[in-house]
Length: 250
Ligand SMILES: [Zn+2]
Image (cartoon, rainbow, N blue to C red):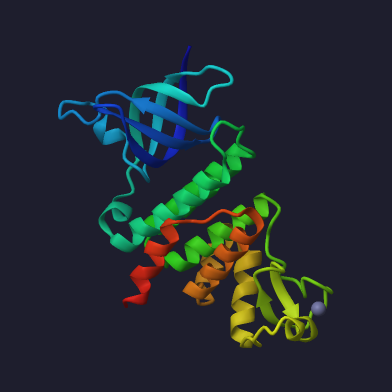
């Protein structure tokens, strides 16, 4: 049977002589992979349609209990020109794509595929629009963590629930009050830092405009969210290092 799936390409890897494998987050089938024949030959008609960080429509034969399929045809729906021309935007897209990739184990069923697809599409759309990439990535991470039930606690102290918070803890997964921060030798943060983190953690991508107008995220917010994700899941986002280095040089 001929299936047609809409998806965002997360990565492309070389596979056999002239073939590649692409990993795609699809709206209907979750994360799946396609083997694409002959892409590395000059004459391939699919080559332009299997580029990472684009949205495409993929035709294939679906078989239950499989996660790798042979791609018949691919057609690009959104190319994301800015993402592919701007180094920081493309590093941000790689960062987001890797989060989506790592959150879904190969071969296992993707949880909430439509939501995950929608979040990554919004993330790519906002990066493409030129919005500050720290803000977009921080909100995307915050949405992903909410969907997987590991959102940072941003209402009160993660230990006692007190609304009078002074610090942020990676291992406790969110805000801490003065007493619980002192017990862990954590520094007191500026009110502005705490306020900004709360806005990001509670906001999510659908409030990107509001968060952006309020000043957006800083790189350190993104780093903390990434560390909390790693603490909960063990997932290390390797492409984050490259992204972060781009901004340290500035
Ligand atoms: Zn407390």
